[in-house]
Length: 248
Image (cartoon, rainbow, N blue to C red):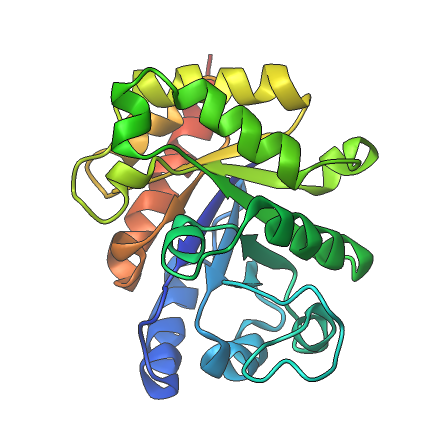
């Protein structure tokens, strides 16, 4: 089943989150062939969790800390997230890597913390424009994955990977579906049977094109997920793709 995930990033107050979910749930109530995930800011997790109870929409967090508790001012543990009903955690997003200086070693520890609490990490990987221009895309991604998943071969089935080329995130300049397919195939050949999402300027116009690629198993959507109607259209593209596959 394809996973369509919304990463709201640092957007929406609790009231705005409530308004969103109130509009969104009726839109997706009949969705049965696509896994839907909302990742609001920490401040809205509790309320959104309550609103999603009994629905077909799952709850995710945008980040976590690797320790369960302690003197880590401003941080949130996987224990706390699980207590709120969170099932997924985005780990290693490029904004965490480049703005906040998170290393592959830190990301590895966060993945371990997620797995220990039964949370499903979505490991984000991707190259910068200069890496792409230098022909280093596959090398960069291989390094990120090998360090982040070191010693975790037995847990691959409990981890998702999101390919998000850094140069495509929030720029309106996505990778082509064909480019994404090449990288997704590379990731699966490297890791094994893992679900790989594409993220990076996904919108209502291009979602269907990405989902038609054989190794694109879902989408991690940023800006286009901030409007419930737009996000629903992307989910509908996944539903339509599934129906077409069933129809042969």
